[in-house]
Length: 333
Picture 1 (cartoon, rainbow, N blue to C red):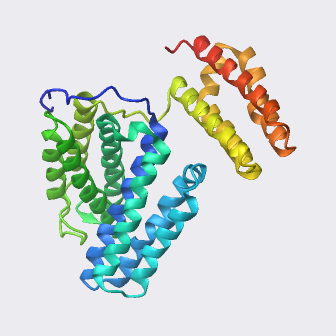
Picture 2: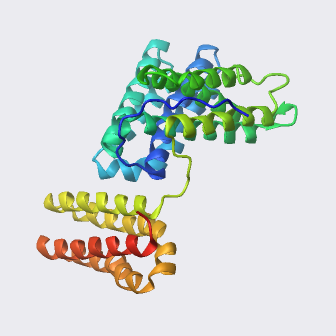
Picture 3: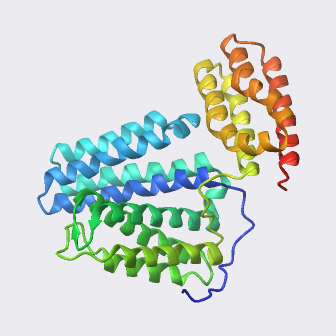
């Protein structure tokens, strides 16, 4: 059991939910992959270095690309991640490789501010991302280690890279908080000792021991740091996300980007409304019966036929009215 921690002083935080946390965790994985890649490159393991340099482009980008596109950052991020991999493929000097990795990492950090908004600066959001990254490292480690040996080296190396990034981010969180956050660096350093490098040890740390430290860290981040550990958005979080995207839709349509607007509405229905649908159908099926066709078909038809902006705005206003009624019916404050 972990000791009770004094709560970190937190500013009044803007709302954020699991989707924003998942975005931040994905961005945090990028420098973790690059850390492994650079270390392997410096030891002469070019195939291993190339494998991990490509992970941000091949594994991380698909998970966040649509969010980046919403803010006009998709193509720029793809180019930056592609450049980072190509610099390594060209067997450039380590300093040049590191510079390309750092450039891609900085762009990723900038994208958090753009895609998440003001919440990105709050200690509670950063604590939530740390907790999510710790869990991602544990998932990788659990896949890699079978009993007393490492059976999947790339997964083990991913876990190592994520934990190195965790340590880096923990120091930033401690520096930002006035007090009460020291447990974060203590736990991150304990994990670093358990997974000390990218090369497989003869006898790896038991998965249960690594899981114990990760679970304790996540619990402390929640109780003392205000971290959200949930994987599924609440109805209110789903509503906030829909309203945010509907506001973005208006801006996209003003710029005449019909294709982007259609994709945006499709994501609202497929992702955000899906989070709201089950509790809504249970609480107020009549609201669902009117709301689902508006989001699922009517808005897309209006956009596809380039209906006047005021007609689209009228539909959006009705959607928001129904969403507010939905939250009242579900019973969330």
